[in-house]
Length: 33
Image (cartoon, rainbow, N blue to C red):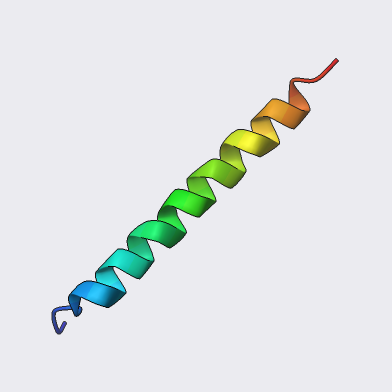
């Protein structure tokens, strides 16, 4: 498995962060009365 260039690693980290935020938003919507 080749090592990812720094830019790709940063992009993947950002995508993971966006996915985590989306999960939090979904949970917040589900918790609305």
